[in-house]
Length: 137
Image (cartoon, rainbow, N blue to C red; front, top):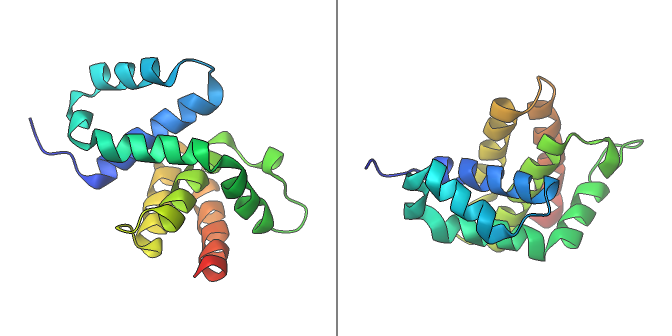
C-alpha cells in the first residue's frame, strides 16, 4: 500500500468533519466507513482523529474566529457548508497543531476548497484565512 501524504489525510479529515456536520451518526461508524472505503487512511488515523475531535471540541471558538473575520454583511449561515468545513479544519490546524505552519494550513485549505467547493470558495477561504492569520499570528 502506498504511503498516504498529509494532504491526502487532510482530505480524509475534511470528509469526516463534513459528514459529522451533516449527520448525527456516531463518529465511530463514520470513521469505520472511511477505513473501509480508504484503507490507506489507517496510516494517518491519529492525525485524522485529532482533526475531527479537535474541530468538534473547539467548534465554538473556531466559529467565533470565522465570524469575526468575515466581511461586513456575512454570517456563518451564509457560508457554504464546504467553505465552513474547510475553514474549521484550517483554523484548528493553525491554532492547535504545532507541526502545521499557518501558511501551509491556509494553502491546503484553498486546495480543499478547489476540490470540493464551487468556483468562488477558494478565494473566499483564502481571504478569511488571511485575516485569521493576521489576528492569531
